[in-house]
Image (cartoon, rainbow, N blue to C red; front, side):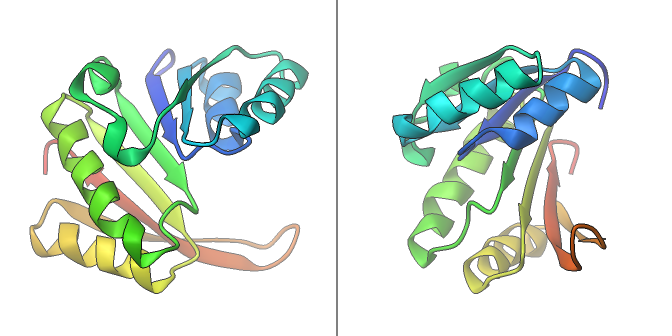
Length: 151
């Protein structure tokens, strides 16, 4: 990730992905979640890590072009866990690409709604699926859906 990238973490929860990007890469991060009750935890984690994060209370369907414009990368982890999330999330990703977002990365432990989202984007040859795993603190694996505006 280039230093200073503008990153939006959708469904940020406690904001750990965005905080990592800010701390490791000097990214300018906006954490987005529909549940504003997570923001105090996100702010605390950001303060502990000595980074600044902007927060926006919005859902997948309420993020507009004006919110997305200027964003380089969208990240999300563990956000496609209900069948009802597939359509709003796919709409958001398409809107993001049309708004000029260059890269979308969605990580998941590979549940069926995530697989459906992956099928949608890979059938249109707009994406690729990357396997990931870690050994610590325990064996965990999943996939990352990578969608690039360059196809």
